[in-house]
Every structure is written in C-alpha cells, then in structure tokens.
Image 1 (cartoon, rainbow, N blue to C red):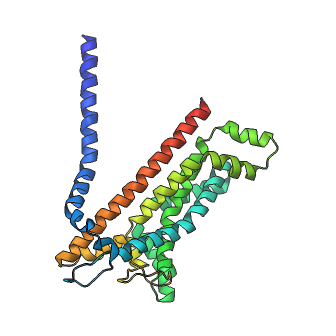
Image 2: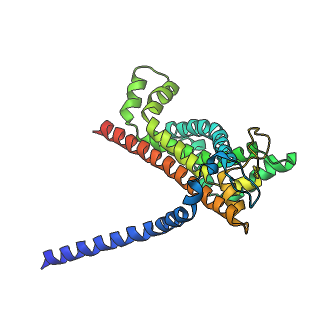
Image 3: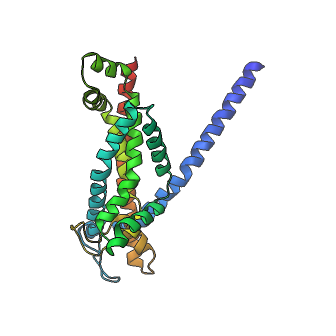
Length: 285
C-alpha cells in the first residue's frame, strides 16, 4: 500500500514538473513561432542584408547599416566593459572579505536589476545633453554599463569554481598573488569568463531603450563613432511604428535576425559554461 502511494506521488510530481516545463517554454515558443512566421520572408531576401534603408514604397530596402551598426556598438561596448569587468571580478574573487569588495558586489547586483531605460537616461544626461549631439560612442557607453555587472559577477563565479589547490600550489612556489590570479586562476576559469562575456554581449545586442537616448539611429551606413548610428533594435522599434507594410516587414525580418544572433551567442555561452563545469568537476575529483 505504501509502495503504491509512493508511486502515485512520484507520478503526480512528474506530471507537475512536465506541466511547469511546458508553461515555461510556451511563451518563448509562441514568440519564436510568431517572429519566424512574420519575418522569414524578409530575412530570406538577399537585398535585406546587402542594401540600406529606403523610403517606403521603394523595393530592395535592407538593414545592412543596422547590422554593421549593431556590430560596431556592441564591439565598442565590449572593449569598454569586458576588460574592466574581468579585472573587477578577479579582485572580488581574490579579496572576497575585503570591505570594498562587499560594496562593489552590492553595486553590481543593483546595477544588474536597474532598468535599461534608466541607464539610457543616465547616459543621455552625461554623454549626450552636454554636447548637444547623439553619437555611437554614447550608445556604446550605455551598453557598456549594462554589460559590466554581468561580466563582473560571472568572472567572480568562474574563479570561485577553480579548485583552491591550484591557487595554493602557485603561492607555494613563491609566485606573487597577482601572477597566481592572472596566469593560473584566470587561465583555468577561461571558459566561465568567456561565458560571462558572451552573456553580456547577448544582453547588449538586444537592448533598445539605451540606444534611443544615445545612438538615436541613422538611415545611412556610418563608421564614425562620433555620429548617430543605426542598430537592429532601433530598426525594429522605428519600423514597427509605421503604417507601411514594407517597413513592418523589415521590422519583423530585423527582429528574426536579432533573435537568431542572440540565440547563437547564448548557445556558445552554454557550451563554454558546460566546459567550465566539466573542468571544475575534474579538479574536485
């Protein structure tokens, strides 16, 4: 009798787990299906990737300038945020009990939960309003603020997964602490650090609100970071608000392309994280 009750309870909890998994996956599946159904026609056209934006009604329009702009903005933001985030995360892992480490960790946690539109307003007040000019540099600065806490916290977590014996072995050989951290610990935690960087890139690539206040957008292909620059999220936002069918199709195509790019980055980060966990498991066994 007790065995039957345990089996019934086990089946009931399995059923609840499957239902919860379906409920969790259903919204994402619906969003993906709706985006693919509306954006695949535009995304399958070669002109979509080879041409720039054109006025409504003129065929052959594309989002090449937005693709290049997204790569430039995310690239500049990565150059600003990733090195700083790795250094700060390393400091947090090496000096966990330090008074300043506690405050920096708290600031990073708060910054992770800060709405992106608030960061966009902050960047506008600091980088745009004083100069009376929108620019890609200000947009990259806003995205870097979003990326920094992600890189910082994931770097710290990756370093904490490295076996303590590696640090102790380096110190026992007489190496300075900074060399142990940079040459031993960071090298061992490299997959986890790469995971954090990729997650930060994925977050920055899909942000719209900070760019509305900083980069603003541009209908031309721009390489000068001192000028306004277009990005895929801005293309989706602006074209989705228009009453013109061709511009709406461009918006759906840009949304699908953005989803695919973010999905690829997230899959790469999952692969790097799995490798980090495997290395950590070998070190503890």
